[in-house]
Length: 442
Image (cartoon, rainbow, N blue to C red; front, side, top):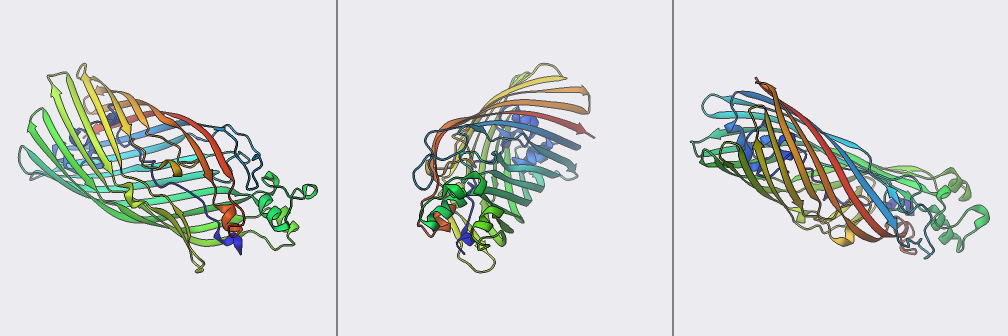
């Protein structure tokens, strides 16, 4: 009965991805709300579609290679003894994110656009048996956004846009269960001869929570052309409420089932978790400095204040599992420049500062960041008139920070009789992002 309340912890913030447009990423998405140069403007400001002539298509792929290293600094089991398991581990697999966009100018100053992108994504994956296994093993959270938008050029100075977002969200979270400590507490003392000791990896079980959902959102944008070389843009994207329907699978090793005479066994619990993707407000400015140079700047506000908790609801009516988060609103700032060397070649560079919404108390092995900073370079090559190849490289300083956390599974399973395993240590993280895109004008 106690095992029915097991839950996993995930931070539903701090995994917003700026990898929507390869050309834009070369200048760190600076001024993206005002660029209006490629069909991917639909992801930043739908009003930008009004400035794109004819029909255009854009496709991009991003390879993200994070390096996440954790150094243990005295992690302990629920009884205060050192926690077993390796203390340094790289829990960051290689991942890929796509983008696909299309724009078409229509008669009467009207333009239309379609987009498919991944605005939020997070994957961490730790080896079985690592020292923080009771906090996290595998975390995978992803959203896919299908965006349809219209833009109207009111006059030579003002364009307006609006769109509908169809969002698909999916999540999978796993962590180990410390049956060694649970049995030790039940029996009143460890029994080493039977392997009943806190943190015994051979007695570890696993909790796996998974779910998915579809939801709708909307976005609005405006673009002002102060003169032929200067643009300002503003765009708002609504919050999206996802109710991830799925299940929580609790795996109990056969040894534990035998030791308890079959009283503990694996089970699957239908469950759901509500996650709110936050609203965003983006501002951008773009200025051409003569024939060869352009500069751009941007700022974005993200309303993470709506993410107060993770609440897991069970279909059979048992009490909800609640994990407080209390995230804060966050700001992103970026600057960039572009140099047009020739009609075939152009080069870009940029800097992006991304404020983390997570309070220190909720940082942990699932979302590992501290105010990431992006240093980016990019180029474009037009081998022939209608085809353009874009490339970008980003070095991401994810940030160093310390953690001191108690996991929730053990105290929930013992009704508070035991405290959770304590994870203490230091994270040192960075990432390389390599992006390649193609654009074609029909």
